[in-house]
Image (cartoon, rainbow, N blue to C red; front, top):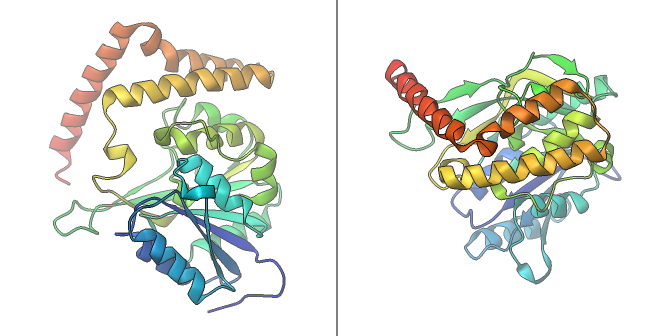
Length: 303
């Protein structure tokens, strides 16, 4: 149902895409099916060369009151973080909800997240569990809900999540499609780090958010996180991962020094995270143990 009111929308939905014509239509449909209707949809194109540009333009032309198409100057490809910032720069809503073009939202996503943020004005960011979605493909594995690796249905004050969640903690990191952020906090935090490599595009923003704003972690599952061979997390080699993670850790150390962060637990977590890169033999040992654990899990879990 369309609950659109006059003036600016309450929520701006930012969908970024790059050559994702296979899945984009389904993501857009899931936005239109939200039970909360006071939203605008911004389709941010990262220089696509397939049919996804035409799909997005068609939706914008069909509903110019609700849907907008934006692109980088010259239709260039600038990367995930720059494209999230592009979409958000064109947003008018008080809240920003991110939806990746290969993911799908459940219909109650906006309704429930908005209720949480409006009931707790000190909270700047909310996210929850995600369904790791394999069954979209015939013959795919069984879907699995992956909870966030922190206490659920509570507000976490900064900077507590830094040492609890990935990339410095052991807990699972949220999927971008699960996140809704208060626009004022997004701007205060400084948005996404456009220099951050694609594998860690969301981690730069989240790492800053954990330092800056209270975060509500929910047990609810609002998004289907599509697993497919083209996904960045499934197509990255070990060497690429190590390179990106090393870059992130150096950047985050500089951030902590610049902000004057003296929390001993955070610095200890940062040192632990950097050990494999300062001592290569530790990295090899870690990879061997991780491989053994992965094989053990697969043997125990037929999915």
